[in-house]
Image (cartoon, rainbow, N blue to C red; front, side, top):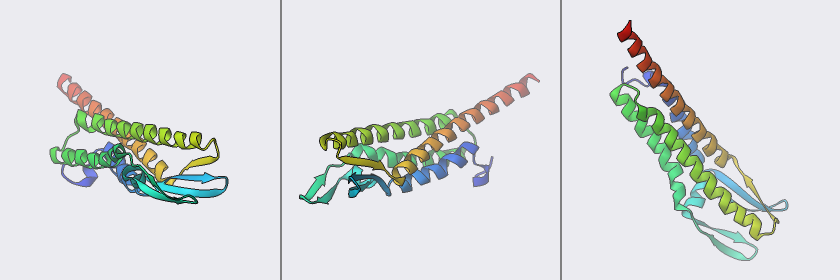
Length: 172
């Protein structure tokens, strides 16, 4: 395998664009909080990570960030680091599959646990008056990391196929 992108393992052909989508979606709107049909606030992944202020009828109110959500951004960079090393070595290793799966699973679990728990509190504190709607940025990150996991599974299967072919070559 050469260093050309077309020789990239199939798993990375799926995972790297998916990681890029997830990273870009991180900066798009994730959550819209509304009361009835009146939108109150919209938050991007960046807003939810570093914190922001919201202007309501009561005035400005700070919204604390959850820095652990940086994992979702850093995992995308991790996919590109793994891809770089795969291109450099020219072969698929266990790290190419399990690394992608791990990055995707850790990101998804972090996002889902933090966001669901945080906005469940909003619904409960407003006694159901506030409605939380997950927007395209959130779904872009979720689908992006689901595709990263798929790319990892494909790399795991590719690595097994290569090992199986080498075994059969030595036996035959």
